Structure formats: structure tokens, C-alpha cells
Length: 214
Image 1 (tube, rainbow, N blue to C red):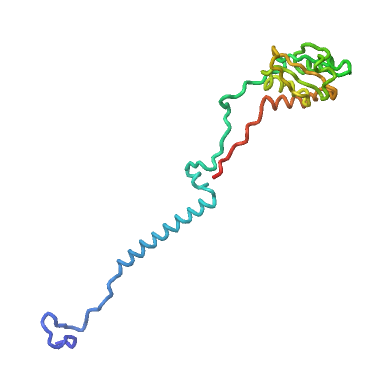
Image 2 (image 1 turned 45 degrees about the vertical axis):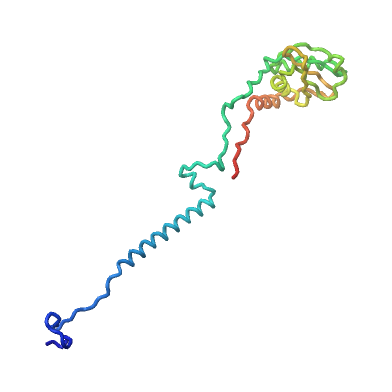
């Protein structure tokens, strides 16, 4: 009997030889799997939180770059041909102007009419102003026309005498305009400035793009 055989035991429980079985701890594969799953979950949550912080501090730019549409921060682009756009303004060569002198200075009406003609306007009557305006216009002048000319021909003529007052006559017939020279008249607006004003009038700048705030 081997010395390793416990007393009273034999047969199949008998241990012979000079070797004995070594006891090993069972491998903890289950714990390793659990730890791996937990680590992946923690990393996933951390990555999601990081993306949320980036989105907060960048105002959602990352979402925009990914093609996500948002109602906030959307800029309204002006339309090239908006509905209900006003008709093109009349050209100077389609506007007939009566030049009337309401001052005591002689020759102003003819001189002014000649200059307007050089600038492309049609000239109608050149004379003294009627009693309604004669010696009663203290400013540079009065531009008078029918109601339909308020936003069309009158602004075009107004580029030639920027300081003139604009008036409309509801009962007035026809499309002719009156340029009535007043006491403060010192001449028409310089041609270069008048041309710039005409260009700006014909090509107004679009309204600033609007931005919706959240």
C-alpha cells in the first residue's frame, strides 16, 4: 500500500506510484465575459455623452453636417423673383416734365428744362408757375403728378432734384409731371449723383436675410 493511500481505503481508491494529482482553480471565464460586456457598455455611454456635449457647444453643427434638417437657425433667402413684385420703373425718356418757375428769378425754368432734356427727360411746358404756387414755394421745388405716379415716375424725377417735395393730385389727368422751382433752388442734383440714385432706384438691394432664433 502506498503511503498516500488513506487508511481503510483500497481498490479503486488506492493511490500507487510516486505522483499525485494537482488541484487547480477553475478558470473564471464567466467573470471575464461579464467584465468585457460592462466595459463596452461604459465606453458606449461615454461616447454618446461626448457627442451630446459637442452638439450643445457647437449649436447642432454636427447634425447639420450630417444632413439633419432643423427649423432653428434657418436663414431665409430672398427670392429672385418674388410674387407680387412691382413693375419696372419708367425710363426718363418716357416721362414728360413741365418746368414751372415759382420764383422772381427769370430764366430758371428754361435753363432747368434744357438740363433735364440732356439727361433724357421729355420736356413739356416751360413757363411761370400758376397762382397756386407762384412765389409760395420756399423749398428747392415741388414735384407734382397724378396719383399713379407716386411710386413710379415721381421717384425717377426725384433723383434729379433730391430736395424737392413730392405731391400728387387725385383729380389730375394724364401722366405728365410738373417740376415747380422754389426759392431755395440752386440747380439740379449733380448728374453723377443723379445717375447713381437712378441706378439704386432701378436695382434696389434685397432685404437682409432673416434668421430664426430658438
